[in-house]
Image (cartoon, rainbow, N blue to C red; front, side, top):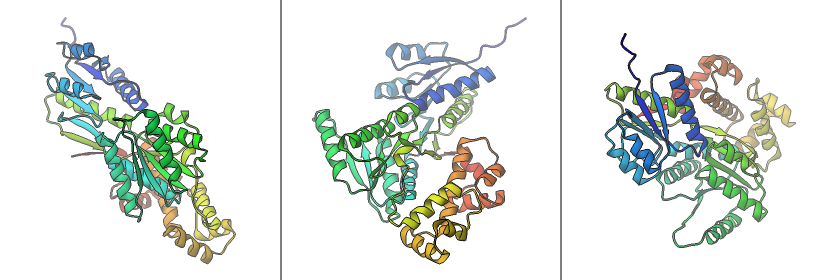
Length: 382
């Protein structure tokens, strides 16, 4: 009796030093355990690992390259390769993040907090993902009439102490209260430490947001760091799909861009920068009660003022109506649930205060130009 065909062996050239990469590895491993479609080899980025990856037993490689040397190796390895992340060179197919969308989401988060001063802290401005996040951050703020201050760390000819001293001075001189986007979670924890050493209160005077959603790094900060979560599960699913199609000889898209992200709010941005106590109370009430029947009359009663007074003061402070703010909070919460839960669209509509799923779909098309199902898929081939 002939034996069963040997499944293809896929090498995973992904360092597991960040939670996003561990999540990708975990999801690929779970899929393989469930389907038994592949065999896996986990490799780090050492030279001997790259030599092993081109052995005859390896059918394909899924890689997150982090050096030009790795890119050079992958480009000449003679195997189907799916690359992840920002440092991919000319390798195709690749799965990348829309880093401008990441920056725009962070800007939106700060705007929701009522902030009027903004900054970007970049420790890796020589990487394209950093400049792209700054661009998206700046463009979203420019649409509201704001321009962020920028600190670009340069390591070339200065000691680390001098660089950090310059960053600390920049931080002290910024107008307060202010929202600062760090280019990644590690940079965000550095900012938190600088604020602590300078006696600057976080989040009351400086709200800090990172990028990555690394659970360990974000919880090491004091206070804990808010962050834009990168979609590890979706990356793994896309990588599996692309590699499976390549092994079958099918044509695949050269670039798949993931552009839906979730803001994980922790203590470092848990604030409202609003001088008007009535508006501050209204914003807090909306955030806590968006899922209820949040009429303007009910919110005015909770704030101890008339509807007319609330509407006037709210519009003057935020440039939005009360009901526009209620709808915005509901839509953003619904988007989080779409990306981070298995609830149906109907269940999410009910949880977020929409009277019926159709209302949620209409709101999504107005806000995002996409349906809830398109948001949940979260990928756009380009």
